[in-house]
Image 1 (cartoon, rainbow, N blue to C red):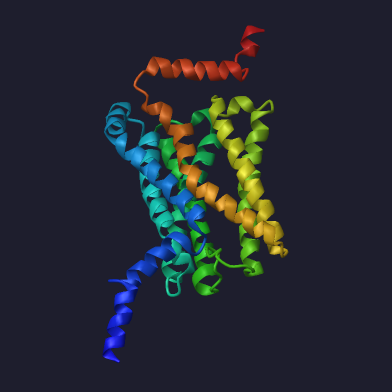
Image 2 (cartoon, rainbow, N blue to C red; image 1 turned 60 degrees about the vertical axis):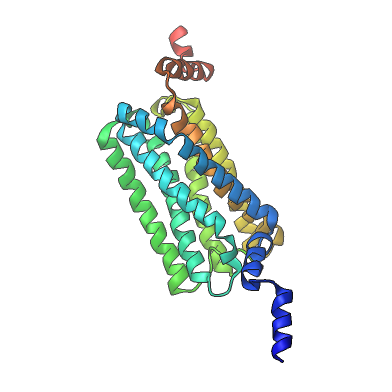
Length: 294
């Protein structure tokens, strides 16, 4: 009996538990492609932030913009959380890891939502967003909204036991999709409202930079697709479950780089004159100076 046990251990290798864990982390649950996209995208972005950190800190120390400093610090924190979330995908499908996965998902998605809502508040405040007062107002609004969102999701997770962050199996509880429909509907309406303002006579009340509204357009489309996916999944469509999961991957892989490129990258350019020329060219192409010429 002892000899057979030794032979079995030799066949299994030096550490069969570790080998099985690595195999599950890479191949099981959502599959290799899913994990690779999330891990590579999040890791490359954090690596880019690290490589640019010295130059960014110098630029921030000279710029002394409270809003940019706060966004940059928040971006670093959320990017690290998102990287941990991407590396922990196997927890979603592992028995006994549900609590850890739900808690990590709650903090990660709430951090990303805080950035998203604060940028929406920044855009809706228009050209008056500058200084410490605007920062306090923007982060105050965002903190209240995200705090309520965290409380609601925590009640769903830990009071009612509804797995709102576990998407490894189908079908899932119908009440879960009701929550996500409301969540995506509110975001879609806000993005749609900003796009409506941008293409109306109230455009001058918004920050005069067309790149912001390319970001808004992308987020409007992504949230509209997610809203559609949640709606049809709640009614029993398996395709909607796949489509919703696709939007989740896109969000976690691409949202933070999109935010950085749209709102922060130009601030860290060394040539301020070049930056002003870029802004002027974008505003001119968007027709902001047509009334002056006429």
